[in-house]
Structure formats: structure tokens, C-alpha cells
Image 1: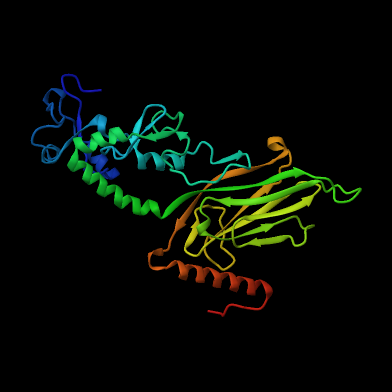
Image 2: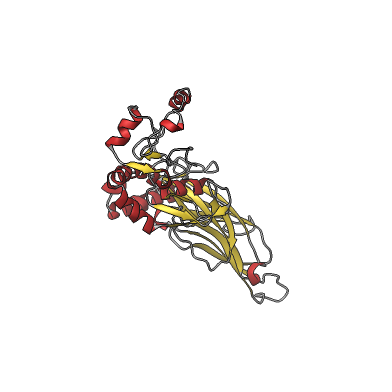
Length: 332
């Protein structure tokens, strides 16, 4: 609400969020009476803030983001009618997912998504469950209204984006398809034909998937180095399958459940459990769709596709030799 006798305050777009110590200092400085505030800027004449405001564009409070307190950049509007920067909404949504894991039909495809517009999360302002959509018209209006401030925000967002790009959110589906079949022989109870699968939205960063079955199966460990990452079996009952999803060199899981990969890469493997489902969705099976974070700690710009394939093939060969006992890595 504007102060009695004054206009709605304005905020300079380029002013950064202050350190907590600076906030303490600012809280000790009494605010000028409302009657002495200038209608154009909302600050006292001659002050340092006034000088910064007059040397650049003054931003209406309605045109600032409620989260970062800066000029709205690539604004999104929520279903509860709040407007935020796209990057602010994305960061908030990933921290407050309403459904990080969802049980869905087996025929749904894994896909990449935009954290700002593709997730349902609690609104940072009213805490109701909401989703957001880009407001292109508002973005164009802000760009025209504040050309200098918009360029400043664009530069800031570009720098922040480099940091955000190092951690990506991917979807990964784990589950099984199922159908009832005639037992292969009389007296057999093996009437459940199932296909277990792991389906990531980013297959290009997956090195291999290790699938651990019940000990009664031979072999009980299956390794898939290329998609589709799945196995098909016939059985009489359900049990829990564990899948170890191993990332390529340079990538790591951002999860407390992650562990080192077989070749020693830190947080390179994530184990996921799935109990076979023979009854959901008309006995066709089911899957759990997860949203997981992956960190990219390697600069791929200097690595060609051919070099990447060669490195991956060499790593697979070394691991296979280690499993067979034909190779031991040299001691460092």
C-alpha cells in the first residue's frame, strides 16, 4: 500500500540484494516521514539512493519480482495470479515440488521439462498449489518500458544461468509392463510375463544401467549399456528389482542416496528400487516417474562426438575386463 499522502514507491532495477549486515544497518536508519517523500521516487532528496535512482530508470513496484525484488525478467504468471521472474519460479518450484515421484501408466513417455512452467509446486507468495506459464506480452512491455534496466537484468541472468546450467533436472521412469499368458507347461504357475525398464529423459548422459533381480534368476545381474534399458522375463510372483543407474564421466547425481560408480566416479551411480506391479491400470503394469538432479562437472565443448564415443567404449571394455578378472587397474 502507498504511504498516506505519497505515491507508490519506486525501486531501482540494478540494486542488488544486500548482505544481512547491511540490512541491520539500514534498519537502524529512521525512514523519512511520508510527507517528505518525493512522489516520483519515494526516497528523500539528496540521499544516496535518490542519486542512484535519478541516474537510471525508476521501476514501479508492480514491475518488480516479489522474490528477488528486481525488475521482472522473463515473467511467468501462476494460476493463482502472481507474477515472478521465470528463474525465480524455477528455483522455487524445484525446491518445493508437490509430486517429485508419481505413479503413472506405462505408456507415458519420459520428457524434458521447464522447471518454471512444467512443475506443480506451492506458490512462494500464497503457498497454494500452482503452476506457471510465460507472460510474453508482459515481458515485451517491460523491455520497452525499461530498456536500460532490462539489459542490466539480462546480463545478470546470463551470469546466473551459467551456474544453474551446471545442475540439470531430468525425469526418469522406472517400472514394468505386464501381461497374463498361458503357462509354458502343465502345472506351471509362470503366467506373468513382465518387462522391467528404466527410461531416462536424458539418455545421452547414461553410461549403463545395472539391473539386480531376485537371486533365483540366472543370471541375477543384467547390465544394459545402451537403450532400451530393460529386460523381459516370465514368472509366477512379484518381487523388488534394484536398478543402478550409472552416469557418464563428468556427470554426478545430486542426491544423498548416490554412491560412487564401479570405476570410482564420485556420486556416479544411483540405485532405484521397483516392486513388480501385476495389477495396476488393468493389469498392464505401472511406472514411477521421478525428477532427479544431475550435475555436469565437465566442459564438453572441447570433446568431439567421436572422442566421447571412444572414451565410453574404452571405459565399458575396462569394466568388463575387471568383472571377468582379466584386468586389474595399476596401483597409484
